[in-house]
Image 1: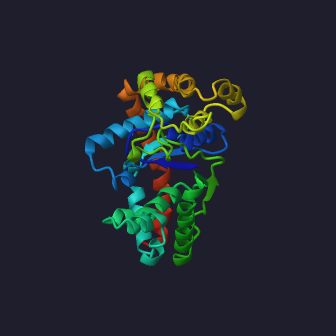
Image 2: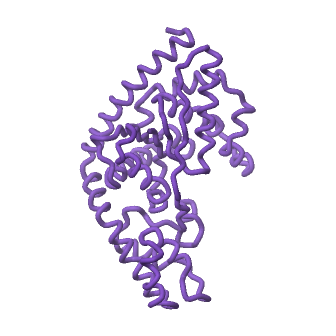
Image 3: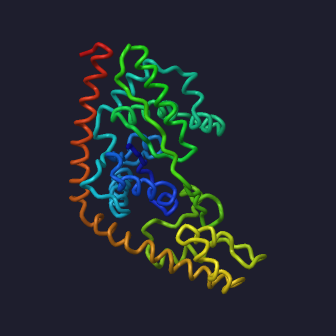
Length: 312
């Protein structure tokens, strides 16, 4: 199993409920060997700040460990520590056409917004295909909107195998995460750093209180829908029903209840996260071990690749 996440900003509860939670649970099943990649080269498309990259990388590793991943049971590594990712991406570039990449959602979105489109944005699916295919990945847990990335990896693998008359690459399957939450922000839109509507994943109680009290509410009903939508991430509708019935129309009381539940959820992870962040040597050790294990796998795969293309 391979999963990647970019170190491109402060993590919030939307990141956790939208992806991290399901990945942690899947890793714990023992069904697959989990490779968790800090996608720092992918992040370069938007994160062009060296100190920011270093900080967010440490925070990301600490966050996954705090969320429940066991460093002994997973391979967590930085993309930039494994040269085979970019090497294989170039090899794939030589057999990948521009019209094929122009169909990618990320490229279409960037083009529609009339942004200056970097080669990195255009080439994003090729590097992602290399990420996935290097590990003989069986499954990639993704949301429905990311399924195209896996389809691109499969298409590139099939073309490589056909062009070079080999069976080097196995075809990965997407594992569509069930009930991937679209987490609402404090303004009712999708929670996103770019909207400034987030609740940080390891927020202090004071910060939680400030953010929750700032949730936009519509005073026309008995239930503040934005508060309720966030509350449903923490408790079932059955658990929430008596609380919201008892405090119908009392928005302040319902926000206070949400604060208590968020604090109860965040506090244990926050304690673990703070301990990891206070021990950067431990994070470095985890990444060093992951680098060694990931390189061993990719170097063996690149021997097969180079034999197939005739350069070794």
